[in-house]
Image 1 (tube, rainbow, N blue to C red):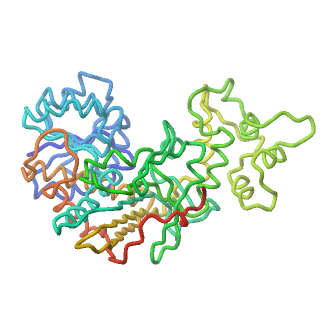
Image 2 (cartoon, one colour; image 1 turned 180 degrees about the horizontal axis):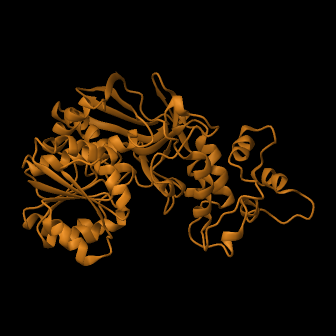
Image 3 (tube, rainbow, N blue to C red; image 1 turned 90 degrees about the horizontal axis):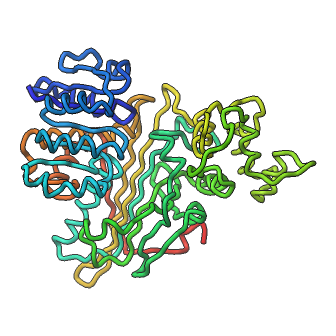
Length: 457
């Protein structure tokens, strides 16, 4: 019996656990589901005979090392900054490891030692990062194999609400960590390359520089730039590329509305607000507005943002109940971003039967035999309900599949890895299609990067 230790049983782990439980008998697996909440771990085990739920504190070194020592392989579904302690223990006890998170500098520093110990630490094998890498490399490798030269690569991904569950003016609900949504784009300017020129978008302009995208059957979307589009230029083998842009997808109009919070300062996470637990929602927004002995909070907000009372932007703010004088923040020593997250959770939490939607869109411009062409690759995945979301499916399935590939010795590479080689991405992409995660590729004349498509300047 091969013991898989899964640390973290949160939202993104639902489909991951279900997939491995379905394989438990044929693959001779036993799952230890470890979470701070024993009740959550028990729920995810579904009383399966090949699963054991445990209450688990990642900061309890003795417990952490004991469970890792018993495991054949470890899956860490913890927040990204917590992976490194698990990784060090996996190295100490010579255990393979899988995460869905970006490779941190600290994780990358372990590469030589991981390789020397004949281990696999597979990272970035969820959705984004993960399926984006694998689906992109499949097409890029095909272009290179034909002798083509990639001139343009644009990649967009977004976790959204499915059309049938889209019930608010923002056309958005939380499908993953709300905190990450609130803090999106912070920590430095977004940087990319456009027609051979480096471009930078500072945070205060990020949500006004969006590109329009069309997905057949689902309508129009917009994409705003990710923080660093250039880090994968060499990883993807795209040293010759003229345009490289990675972005996040939202429904059209979301970014312009979100920019109101950015301009007011409500997404700031760098300081705490005095006496925050006693503030009302109305008090909170008033913190960011000029003093006026006569104007109402509503009037000051409209003046500050330059919006009229009949503007849909105003309706979006009203829908969030931001001006409620009786609702309390009830968060001590909270940052503006933490308070905003709580307010948004009131309106944007998926209801039990709500369905979410993942949209991924790649554009590849390339030159082959003197002719320029373009391939557009699109994937849409709809969730089942609040628990078995499209987000949990597209994050969890590739993690689970990679875990089995490692367990069954189908991956020969060693070290701190990304899923960017054929031996990794081909079997995972093929199996994902059986679960409805399918990319539709269309070849067309080369369009290139068109600044006229931008909704801001």
